[in-house]
Image (cartoon, rainbow, N blue to C red; front, side, top):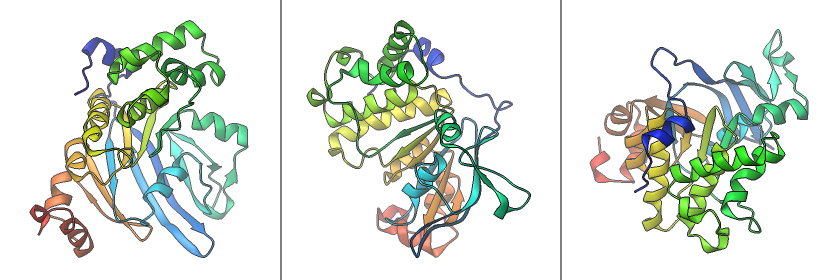
Length: 280
């Protein structure tokens, strides 16, 4: 298990109170095509500050594309995405067809507020763990090296890797590399974190340490959108679970409601594949 002191966690992420909860992410009628294939169809989704939303569904349902559209790693043909009141990618116009694309510089600046952790770790192999975490704050945001390193030490302590700061990625396990990737994303002080199947490439015995780090983030009040196939983890961490299929949101609700009493047959059929206890 990852060990984190209350002192470190309070300095890493400022918890959100119930009164302070506000929309951190708002997607309005977002649609995305790859050629003739419509991967997202009029997706509207709102995530409050401090809320953890877990997205589940079959392969090809649009889950990863959803995350990539949020931070404009994928452009989209229709709709608006807003992070903490500020649009990313497009500004709304008088009508949906009159939206205006932001400049690449504006998109890059808006993207700094969004942390994303992928299935692959994407660490720089020629850099130590400490340098992997400090590179972006120093180069992108101009944070002084001493301050960036102090922050990195806090984040690495949070994910249980204080003793690995001088190591290179090749000397780390997959679970350790993924936790470095989480610390690296947090080093940019994002307003929201996106996780795309971050345990899918790990051996089963390494999954728990990464999930524990994510649970610490949730307890500390970080706004998170998590794509996962780990149903027990989804139930433990989520404030809300969203089920996607065919590029649309089929159903969403509180974890126990959606996992044990779904209202649609499509969700019931999907959950039966994972465990007999989900039979409705």
